[in-house]
Amino acid sequence: MRFINLLKIALRALNNNKLRCFLTMLGIIIGVASVITMLAIGQGSKNSIKAQISEMGSNMLMIHPGTGQRGGVRQSADDMQTLKVEDYETLRDNAKYITAISPQVSSSGQFINGNNNYPSSLSGITPDYLDIRKLKVKSGEMFTDHDIATAAKVCVLGQTVVDNLFPNGENPIGKVVRFNKIPLTVIGVLEEKGTNSMGQDQDDVVLAPYTTVMKRVLAIDYIQGLFASAIDENLSEEASDEITAILRSNHKLKDDADNDFNIRSQQELSEMMSSTSDMMTVLLACIAGISLLVGGIGIMNIMYVSVTERTREIGLRMSIGARGIDILSQFLIEAVIISVTGGIIGIIMGIIASWLVNVIAQWPIYIQIYSVVLSFVVCTVTGIFFGWYPARKAANLDPIEAIRYE
Image 1: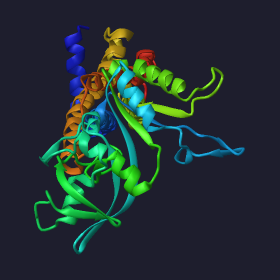
Image 2: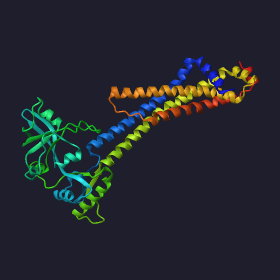
Image 3: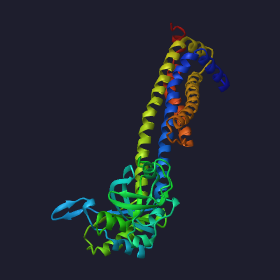
Image 4: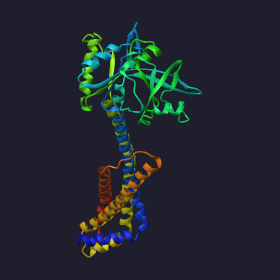
């Protein structure tokens, strides 16, 4: 029998059982839609994380004191005082793989303006910190090297701090706010950056000269960390190696001694977050893929029922010359039509569901072509795989026994 005739017979058989055919497709539809939606959510989250890390400075390096022992007791990184201003100056003057570097010291406390107060942290840095963290001054100005040299009592506010200390929309430039008991003159306001991928408010920040925080707030002679910017994201590893060599030399560490500092790059953070996101995406896709398996089993079940119901029809066809391959092809075509049609509807539903997730839940989504193609291929293979055995059973029926079947 020609393929076109087999196709007509298969379509006629499916048309005679519309509801049963649709219910069989439902498993495939749900499975394909779920896979596309889950992959879109996973990839959207991954892209969002990468974009936000890039906004923080994809080539940023963070140097912090390492853990060590003092008096036989292992200390935490917060208790170590291994980084000095001299380390910052040496790296600034000698490191070739970094374009900007800033020391960092911070203190938490209460900011007060008249009757308004807000708990936040005061970060002591240099103007290079803005380039490293991709920050910009929206109004006013950034403090200068002269302010750093004189430990001037000036600061630059993030928008969240401005909103809480100046709730009536008052211009904060030139006003004096108190951090605990220390007066600081506001000379600038940063552009808004919003919340990052880890839920941290990037506008909840107050910047001041690092010398001001060291001398006037913390009364310390060491720095708590360093932020640097590599020439290029691809040169982050070279920059890290160079920083390691300079700091080990500065700290006079022996060849067999461990580093008394830690270096982390945004590239490492990006890779870690991407790996976690990929793992969750695969997990979600596997869970959604169970629906495809259930849909395939449904196809097999319905095809078995169809073979049983049409046993006499199969016998009559074979008695007038239909070959086993014709009967097998007929039932296989029915299974593939069900799975492919269900796959197409599932793809459409998956795209609509992904769009609704983006609109209603405000989750970032990204539908990749490969996920659509993969879903379509899988549902087609599912139809062939689960339809093959019932179709083969139909093809192997004995014509005489089939005609006599009640």
